[in-house]
Length: 476
Image (cartoon, rainbow, N blue to C red):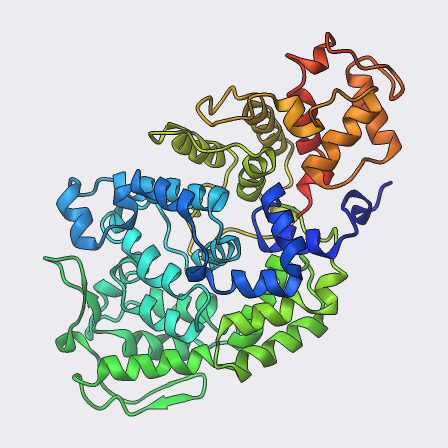
């Protein structure tokens, strides 16, 4: 049985690209070899400094995806899902074609951690604004700041019912998820939940405008204790300040630090992350007052990360995105049909961006996605995308064989397979795997390759598709 590490190139630069982006491309490989790991990481941690013309142009085709609450209300009908659907398409477009790859990966990470399901009827007007002003604004900033902004956003307050919470009847949903999912994890008491819910009353949404407002008249006063946090909570006018103090406390709680460090290790290192790295990153998080960039820098430069080749598998969403990136397809020149099609493909694969229904976000471990039906869906998508069957409006290389194997026709089937594998998955295949691909075409590795052969024409897309179906590509 082939070990997972044997499917991937033992190249630390390619390892970093496979984990910190949605998949290597020839351009990103050239860039990281020019800048080195440190230079590349430094650049990615400052996304605003990276020109992003292709992604910016695509977003102009999805104008609702970046709208404010008022903007969505002005441009769509009440309870329309148009803006949320555009936001999902925008997420796919950015994941595939943005130059700010680490930033986009972290946007996805935080969208899962502070999940507000999209599409979801009650956040029809606020979900794009939540993406822009909460997740994207703080994805590489301080978690404490993101947490506080999320707690005062109409999307979160609606999704977890805090807008319906009153001093007479505090709703415990947000208070519970704030503790269990957003911060410390399990270990709280029911009294902690009740006190958190009381302190969060008054954080609400204006029913007329749909934007956040603090309603002092609905704030439940009186002393509270939550996991060691104590506040007199003496006045309704000071309720918002008291709630923000709780969120600061929770963001800097050691249990929160460990939980976020663990989730980052699961995302970037291993489904079963090493305790040594979790401990190290927990300290970095606390020492840097919940700033995420120093934690990522420590993670990607750690010995544990270097030793983790072969320990992560792409989720369905990452698989589809990586497929387009690996093949080098460009977006259609105009319109959004291909973007919509890619979104629908991720939906069919079970992981459309931001669409997980429960508040805990998509799982990020291989066992959650291991099913024969899901595998078949992804395999079909690989061939459809490689052959240009669907979406049929993506711009594929005019000469795919030349694009992946060079302008000179390789002399043998073995040379062809080696060339295409090196281009698409970064290495040649094990002999038995290369032999299996040649056998698919009824040939051996030594068989001469002629320009009139099917593999040099209509049957060529099956070769990249089979490579994309394999662990050489499936491993992150």
